[in-house]
Image 1 (tube, one colour):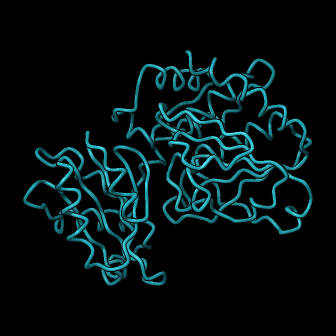
Image 2 (cartoon, helix red, strand yellow; image 1 turned 120 degrees about the vertical axis):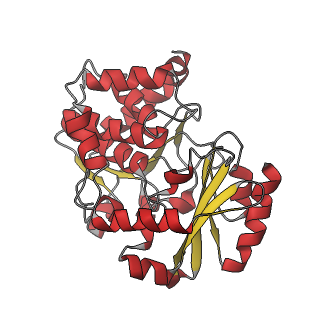
Length: 323
């Protein structure tokens, strides 16, 4: 693949920096999805397996959607770790405002791995491939570039695979190409069993999730031009007994409905006086609308924030104008 050749120089520079530092911290974005955590953990376990004498941590807050499921609890890392020279590796995070934990700023050197447009090249090394389906696909490619000397442990394969699956909607999205399947296939060659190692826990549901699904189906609205959406206010979250982080959990329920090219969810974060918006589309570029509403992301999957529910009419109109 030409991509690997294009990135080979940066891959070698990144590995050189990894070898240089005895302390490494891997960061990802706030309110992580499968790709953010999968990439972060996949890289950490590869680093720990390849360089066992180094002190390596994964950084970020626990996220309710992933507690007691596919991933381990996030580490609590003392401030003392960040007082000496360390390497920060930041994955799946387009801009520095979204990095979960500001202690990355204390890093002696920063490597950025991302598959979003490089609007803010905040790394000392910026390894960007926005043609790839996921950050997990990119970082898997990086690790596999050196697999003869540093093979991937099974846990890395598990986490990278979950990130690819999460960001491709189980290989359904338009970002998927033959290389996506090539990377997934190479992860399977290490002995990964997707059903047992990934899918069983990735898609396991609790009662609260089923109640949320029922709420979405009963409360979904569709605008006159085909924008579908649902709203979860603080009172709805309390009645459903879920945290706000789970608000977008069933966004995909609206993804395959005829004549609905764009859909979104709005979840109230009362303690922050804001409403977080998750927007999806089949083919239409929604990223510019997301940018207008304090957000951003991919062409077909973006996030935004509004500060009053009264802004919803303006948001719907802007999305309808795209249609």
